[in-house]
Structures are given as structure tokens and as C-alpha cells.
Amino acid sequence: QVQLVESGGGLVQAGGSLRLSCAVSGRTFSSYAMGWFRQAPGKEREFVAAINRIGINKYYADSVAGLFTISRDNAKNTVYLQMNSLKPEDTAVYYCAAKYGPSTYRRTYEYDYWGQGTQVTVSS
Image 1 (cartoon, one colour):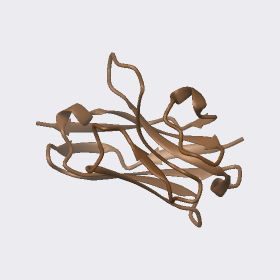
Image 2 (tube, rainbow, N blue to C red):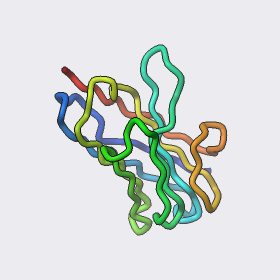
Image 3 (spheres, rainbow, N blue to C red):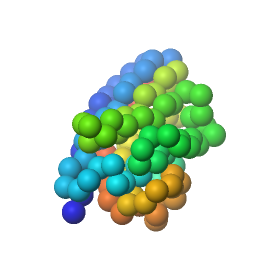
């Protein structure tokens, strides 16, 4: 079993930055590709960013490309999401997810484990 715990969410003004962290325990972290997703009220959960298990390959949703950066530290069993130039439409609960496999993955159903989520609110 794999446990994921997100942190770093909060309230920020438009144009500000936040860094989310996701601490992973229970299995060999470096065997898992990781992803970040978000879900706004009344909307489906959507893909934000993904990273492969060694941190070389990264993939972003068009809406965040160039603004958000995903990274991982396999020595710390942690994946990060640096979010810059935040907009009110980025307001959502942000989830990290783990997938046992070598690639990057963009679809919710591909992921094996999920965290409980952390709220990000961007005020205008």
C-alpha cells in the first residue's frame, strides 16, 4: 500500500505563488510515476502535471504549461508542484497521485493511489 499526503495549499492573491508537496510512503517511491490533478467545485477532476519515476520526463496541461513546474526528490520520497502567476481559475482542491510504471500518465483512471487533497484558493 502507498500513502500520499499533500501539503502547501492555502489562500493567495492572484499573481502569487505556492509550492505544493506530496510525501509518499509505503513502497519504493522511485518505482512510481507521479501526477498532480485538481478539482474545482462542480467540475470533474482534471490533469495538471505528471513526472516519470526518475524525474526526466514531465508533462503539463496546456492551461498551466510555463507557469507550473513539477519536480521530485526521490531521496525524500516527495513530489512538488511549484505554481507561479496564479489565477482565480486555479482555485481547486489539488491531489497528487502515484502510478506504478515507467512513463508519464495523464488520466485519472491510470493512477493507483491518491492523496486526500489540499485546497488552493486564489483571490482576485
